[in-house]
Length: 341
Image 1 (tube, helix red, strand yellow):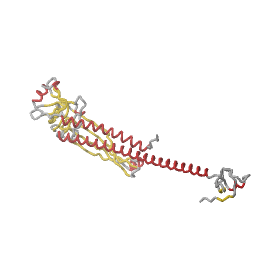
Image 2 (cartoon, one colour):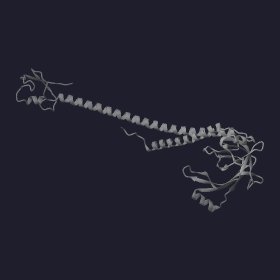
Image 3 (cartoon, one colour):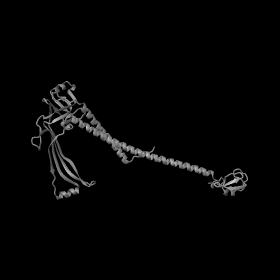
Image 4 (cartoon, helix red, strand yellow):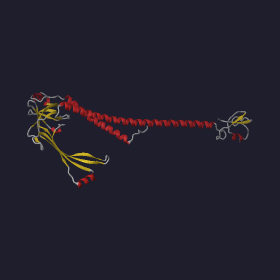
């Protein structure tokens, strides 16, 4: 069997497309499972009847539910370090460095950033319903989201002298400055939470990350927006998986087409070679039949009469010791030259 002609570049493209399509499909299936869980999750009103509902539920647990409420700290809230009067339950402080880096290929300066420092603070908080019923949110930092409000953002411009400028051009890096931001999930913000709801021994409602591995959500938007966002992400991962799979199929088709053309070319060359061999054998047989029966090297060139045999060349006829036909031994009366067109 002929070796399949696939080059290094085609092998890398094919392997990468298979690996990426498999990875993207895995992420898509995970996102699709999350969307299906969200579609099946019941939306429960946060009120006083929720305690009785959980008491009547086996295990006093609802595995995946949707609850909406407003944020209220259990104790003292977190206070903003930069904005007076801003309080919340989750605080995120980030310091980013922005700089220009010389790209020798594009021959231009490109913007880069990196996180120099990041700190996230959180305090225990509840979600409060319309009639004052509350649910304690456990492990909020493990949740996807929430989208917090930026309460402070300030860019500190870098300052440098002539020697700094010279060093920057020599090193290819030019600092622009540092961006300082503070984000907070403020007290009183409306939050949609999706997780596992349990009733503690002290009759306290708690929402925690699902024990079955499902995704835990905290969102400042409504549930419909959260569901549509997850569906959009699932669709994006599916599109990426399909694109990578199509690239792999295209590489396979291209390699297969090239292999088919090479095989067709080889079959054509083999067919021509056999035809030439057959023609050569046929010509050789024909040439052997027309050779002189005496010397076997010169073509037959005369007709012996009266027998009419054409069996030798004229030189061999002249060299016969007796004027008799080499085939029938009949006496030769005369010889006629043979002309072949």
